[in-house]
Amino acid sequence: MIIDPTEVQAIKSFSRLESLKEISETIRMLVPILILILGITIGVLVIVWLERQISAGIQQRIGPEYAGPLGILQALADGIKLLFKENLLPSRGDTRLFSIGPSIAVISILLSYSVIPFGYRLVLADLSIGVFLWIAISSIAPIGLLMSGYGSNNKYSFLGGLRAAAQSISYEIPLTLCVLSISLLSNSSSTVDIVEAQSKYGFWGWNLWRQPIGFIVFIISSLAECERLPFDLPEAEEELVAGYQTEYSGIKFGLFYVASYLNLLVSSLFVTVLYLGGWNLSIPYILIPELLEINKASGVFGPTIGIFITLAKTFLFLFIPITTRWTLPRLRMDQLLNLGWKFLLPISLGNLLLTTSSQLLSL
Image 1 (cartoon, helix red, strand yellow):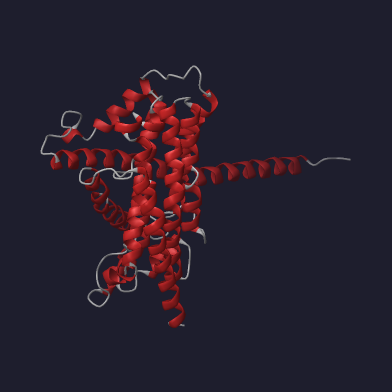
Image 2 (cartoon, helix red, strand yellow):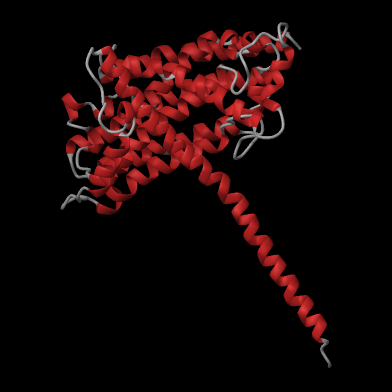
């Protein structure tokens, strides 16, 4: 059989085009992920700087001021210091669990950012079960903390891991019930649809006004999920040295530090998406209806406005968890569990029943 050289050349050209198409498709998928990771990293650095400055103001002292202008690079300097510090391993601990624990905590939180819409059509994965995927993924992080506490072979670390698991179980149920109420109001579990459902009346269309009880329960449950004061029982310094972080040093300790602020940022973003209108402007529809569509404009201007509005609402909300850290005393473990099971769970369940009844009556 005689093979035509032109056919061979055509086959080679076709295979080359196919390989180039696969490479371009891979790049198209990786670029948004890398941009999101870079943006998250910058956001965490800003939160660390913001918390230090606000804390300094509350305590009437001077915060970081030498590392960069206004001390903005202090968090970066701390991260570089942890990167080069010695990485110690407990001699009698389970080194495999000890090493895997911080990674599980960070990765599970990072995956939650994939369903957050930062602007109109600016979401990595617009899933129909977006909010419940976040709840499912966030429940993996306490497993990493429990592994870290157990693998350290330290009674204080193990107690911290057990507290983290108990706290997560106690407060995930009220959090889920609040999210379910929002899904019923929006007739969707997609984060994009939830934001769009709040865009009709501008500021007055926010779920904050339609779900005030759920908003308060969601904030308290989010603080407990992030292990922020007054719910920082898993790493209570006066009781457990540093909890599950006691035996850690170097970059592994830095991963726990990053995971804490990543969790705080993602919780604040979900508050913005679920209750504060997401990327939409806070202008009543009757006044200037054209401005409500400005963040849907084509080109670079529209998405930039949407990202700016989302981040502005998020960082304004961050003042609440930062100020509570220096305002409220730490709860006891029995008080924390009683608050979750005896108060927040019945309140969130009653709020869900009221929301369901109102939706049925409106049909």
